[in-house]
Length: 273
Length: 267
Image (cartoon, rainbow over all chains, first blue to last red; front, side, top):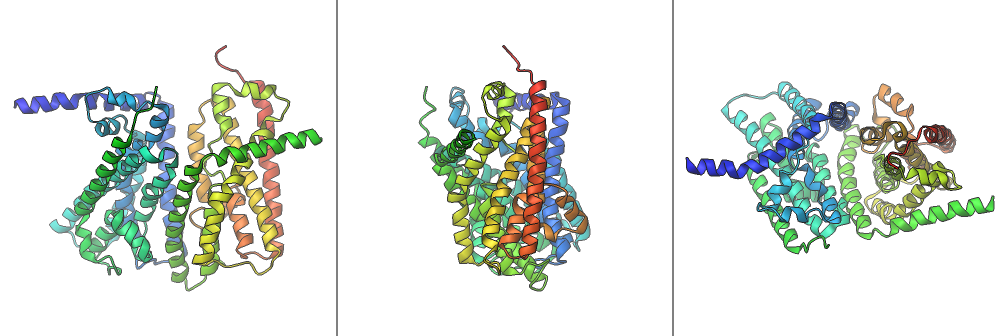
């Protein structure tokens, strides 16, 4: 009981900051509406990029459009939610250049936790809606035998997908302490990872399977669970049973992320001044 | 006349040199462009093969040219809509620009083009080198090269001139971020950044052609990949000149109207 109250008291500052960020975003109604629309538009265009390919050919990498919708839906929904909660880790180079990161050091809270809870991008909810609709459409179109196993797989994969993408943002953040202006280098794998995750991994070359199948476990966020759910033939180097290993992939991604974060923070010598 | 040319030449060089200061950024861009390029190769080659080896005039070789030239141009063509002029309008520094004996629009675009031209060296040339190794088709006629290079340059200028329009909308909107994000989302798609626009369904292809975006990236690629012949190349160059005149003229008109409308906040 006393522990519960103590925990609540410790979490309260984070909740207050997040609530204030949410309020500040929604208080300018017109601006927030425009943000929602542009975020929706970016989700729709990303879906359109996939749709256009499947309009030109009916099957790609052994999948038809209904099946890729499931891959896209799972991966994109997970990415959008992770982006909403962790996306502002991208702004670390700006904080580093301006020296405003040092403010975080003045507070008796862990640095990473402060950075993550310093903002929440509500506008990305509309993007997540695109992923959700694609996911539902993909589930409806697919020939899925529903039982406890498939529901569990879907939930496990979504949760670990969100965790995996969140880890990517933290991983990139940790490396910004070294890169600062070279942020595009990590973008290649964070946003390139999103792009890869919404593709049929069966078309990848072997090096791509190593990079986006295993090292950055992007195939685990959409493609591999979809292979199990839809009972598709698994491509070489990515066996079907991996579809159940989303949580392991998320653990691996977080281990890498926290290592890079720790490494980055140790390297940091303050903004001067 | 000669002094005017000299001033703009200096602006172009200043932009070029300014960009050359960011070495690590250039390396980062190189890594990003290569990674995305390899992903595009995987999915687009699979698409061409699934279509039986040829799709809308693209075989695997031409698709390779499409991928690597689009990646090479990515650092130089403004498909994000961010401009310096937008910042300067927002904080009022543009008032000083208007005091200079230079055309605000021409000076801004010249500086941007200078930066873009530099970006072709660290970001563009390595992509072409990778493409040459991974495999890309060459055009049939040697004349396609000078025409293609001219088309690349026109594409860069058109993109700067179009992004400038987003910036000067700030004379009326003050905050142009929403417009800039819309530009970013739409421009890449319609310029053919992830999928060549010829793969689009007909109605979407018409929408793309009704916008200046394909002339920034898709037209130069069509010329350099040999998907269009010489006559087609000349027609595309004509279309680019028309778009440049259109967006350039609109930018000039908006700059003049904005100057009359300008209220610098604060004293």
